[in-house]
Length: 252
Image (tube, rainbow, N blue to C red):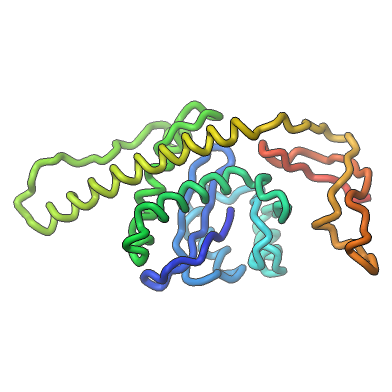
């Protein structure tokens, strides 16, 4: 999960909260007013995500102020949800959200550059298209994984209804849908090609293995951070948190 980008205000919204289900790869793109507080973010999740998918066991997020606050931790703890934070120097540990965020960003930049005030109106189309794309890791679309079937794409006919307002809406909708699909598919192909060129085999650790940790994100009590050791440890691996290479360790 991630609160992404400052955008041109539209209907009071300037931020997109990107939420991705780790199992199904299903995403929700929620427009929010400003940079939300911890409580506003939690309420948005409960209103738009939890009531549809249920309360999750774990939430992985970036290190935004709303996700590191006491309010956020207390709210999630009361729901029985464990909270995991990505490394500020390794956002790829929340890779599923990062990919969706990049794909949505590419689409908004290319399709909304001449009409930046309309970005919020395109979010539902982008979300629908993303949830209709096949994922190599599951072999199905997020819709199929969640619902058991793929909803009809663009469920309308090109015929006229005889009502100008309705015909105009569907004409604009068809153009938007075609643009969303083509641009997101292109973004997925480009990102996959780039990842394949740079991807290396990440080490796999098991519970009980001992590892060294980068000291960049650790609150070490040292008189001078510049003279701190680059790595500290070794620490025992407790469990693997996700498929992106994030692990939980015991700092003892």
